[in-house]
Image 1: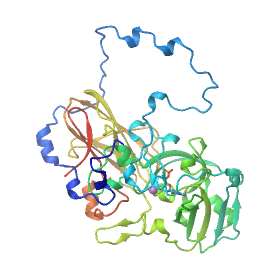
Image 2 (image 1 turned 180 degrees about the horizontal axis):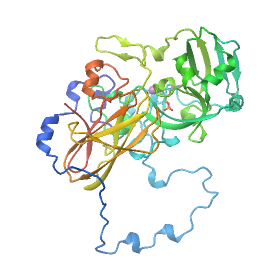
Image 3 (image 1 turned 60 degrees about the vertical axis):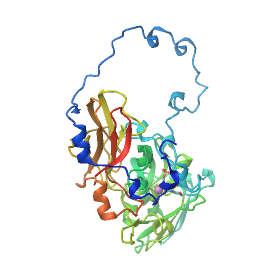
Image 4 (image 1 turned 90 degrees about the vertical axis):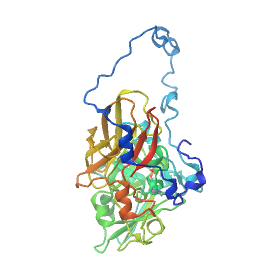
Amino acid sequence: MDGKRSNPAKHRVGESSAADRKTMDRRRFLAGAGLAGAAVAGAIPVRAQTLAKPDPAITEVPDWSRYLGDGVAARPYGSPSSFEKHVVRRDVEWLTASRESSVNFTPLHELDGIITPSGLCFERHHGGIAEIDPAQHRLMINGLVEKPMVFTLEDLKRFPNRMNRVYFLECAANSGMEWRGAQLNGCQYTHGMVHNVMYTGISLKSVLDQAGIRPNAKWLLVEGADSAGMTRSIPIEKALKDCMVVWGMNGEALRPEQGYPLRIVVPGWEGNMWVKWLRRIEVGDQPWQHREETSKYTDLLENGTSRRFTFVMDAKSVVTNPSPQAPLKHKGPNVMTGLAWSGRGTVTRVDVSIDGGKNWHTARLDGPVLPMSLTRFYFDIDWNGQEMLVQSRAFDSTGYVQPTKEELRKIRGVNSIYHNNGIQTWFVHKNGETENVEVS
Ligand code: MTE
Ligand code: CO
């Protein structure tokens, strides 16, 4: 896999040392590189080629223009062009002990717009993909309710007030390998535990209302039907505010990887709480303190104590192009692009730097800018082949500004593997090759 470095064993979670860090001295870089030629472009005319000799791509008739193509019966469920075979989720073999309790990553550098195609949404599961027969699947509500209830999928689909919402899901462990220094070479690996999907379903509140929650209800336990039987506690305020019970993603049924036939959506909060293959909701008066919210998915601090719950995913962004898997190929006009998101609201602004954070330029947001959704940004440059230290920083509707990794480490230390939303730096070499570094 592309992201692997020379000595994989050295780079397991929590084992990389300070010496492993790829740190660039920002001042030295600035002194040496000289950014005079790095024009921040307004409107750059892209120069068309003048043809010195006949181009066979124009003068020869290709096979696809000579022969009939597949008919309508050949592809009842479409898939991407065979020339797009490299656009796939990828995993890092040495990262986890088994493939069933593991993760793969969204190829962010190959995507555009804000919606993640269903087949490319990263997967994180603790006990493999459950293959559930929807006719046999039930959702049970019990605990502190007036009337414990069991719903079939068909029951849920007959609820009024069906709704569609676009939300990002980010695993708390996204960028977790980068706490101690730059490590994985590719935004797919450093930031690819995020996806952005339009969900179809109903509000969790409408399901709870059917059962009638008791006045002393304070927390919910949501449980999956996979072999991991994942459980998480969710505060009742959040559950009633904007959580959803969903069966649809991007206009069709959930994919098995994403929890077919039913999952819970917890907008803006860490992905681990978005229980897939949802089969039970228990209403209680306190959190359950299960494994996934105690020994895992809590933030270990420098002094050995842990933050109890860190539900919300703070504002974060990354330049996806250029990045190590998507180097710059042309001098002159280039479109830099990336993604920004915030679990606290809407992305209001994204800045891009090409000199390691010394100067910032406001990027252009394009496409829908929705709360708790990925937001696309573009930054057009005229690149004369000079070295660049490319960064982005996100601002959100609460006034929060994405911190540098240094700022983050001052407060959080480097023991955690969760909630790393520090600013990412890519070093673009003169030949356009790009690598994961840090600036100091
Ligand atoms: N739900 C169940 N039942 N089992 C799981 O292993 N993994 C969780 C969460 N829900 C998990 C689960 C974690 S850690 C994350 S980050 C998200 O699902 C990943 O969602 P995805 O596979 O759609 O990307
Ligand atoms: Co996760």
